[in-house]
Length: 78
Image 1 (cartoon, rainbow, N blue to C red):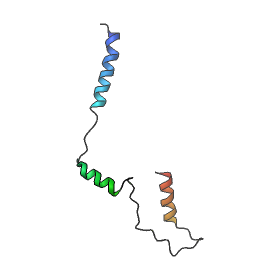
Image 2 (image 1 turned 30 degrees about the vertical axis):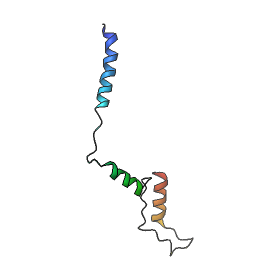
Image 3 (image 1 turned 60 degrees about the horizontal axis):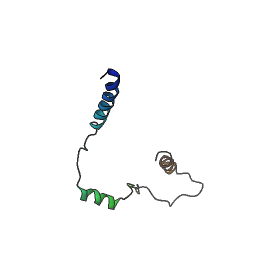
Image 4 (image 1 turned 90 degrees about the vertical axis):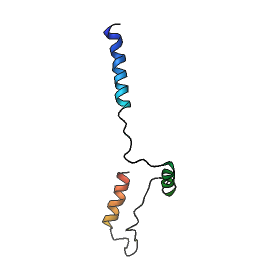
């Protein structure tokens, strides 16, 4: 066997070995029941912030800068 025949195969094998060993396990493991319970409580992974959701007290000419910033942030940074 010459260098030209085994070198590409060795490089591919080394690349597969290195990428296969790169995965690390999560720090805490949860059971299947815990994952299912979390999925049932929040199926899409969306947890809205309802702490400042009052819409009363403002007119159509009043600008809620915090609300605008929050809305733009949600649109531009999904």
